View 1 (cartoon, rainbow, N blue to C red):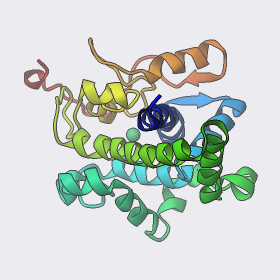
View 2 (view 1 turned 135 degrees about the vertical axis):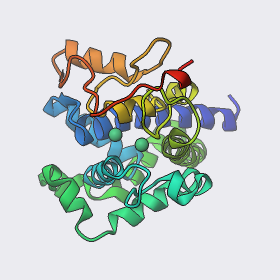
View 3 (view 1 turned 30 degrees about the horizontal axis):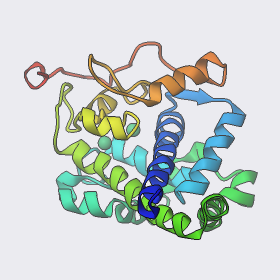
Length: 252
Ligand SMILES: [Zn+2]
Ligand SMILES: [Zn+2]
């Protein structure tokens, strides 16, 4: 196969693995406690995040919880309403890093995720994880494909993360009365995260699809983890934040 196409396909697969791990582990499990994962599965997700994203979970979780506490009002770390759509879409990671540098923010908003022995020995060494990720690609696919795919994955992962925060607070449907939006096309390529209006309405719901014809591809994986006793779900039915109003008019 052509070098470029092969790299693109590989990057797509790596990005999707990273996106599924981000939504199931970092977002739904660690940030919102919507589900509880078994120790081995949790460790597996931590390893994937380490190899593919360079993210320290407690930092991501803290920034995300601040986003829910101050959604689109001053204090929101990455609001397109405050910072502009283009800034968040293109420089989402910069806003994350800025928030992390706020003294005490991570300690305060991720108290439950204080560094453990695995963090100290392995997962806090984010560049080692990313480097090892590239080495694994190199050993399997050779250096040309490995480097090209790693570069493409970086662009895709940052682009999709930016899109959830930028598009997901700007364009799309708002069935529930919050400023976030639902976009099925975005949900399809972000393992359900594009149903961001649903998520802000019911943040502790392990399932992001709440209506007909909504796509949450992470949900079957979560169901599989539940069936195999590797995960438990917090709420059987979505628990909506109070008060929640339904904008019937905008839900065509
Ligand atoms: Zn949001
Ligand atoms: Zn959330």
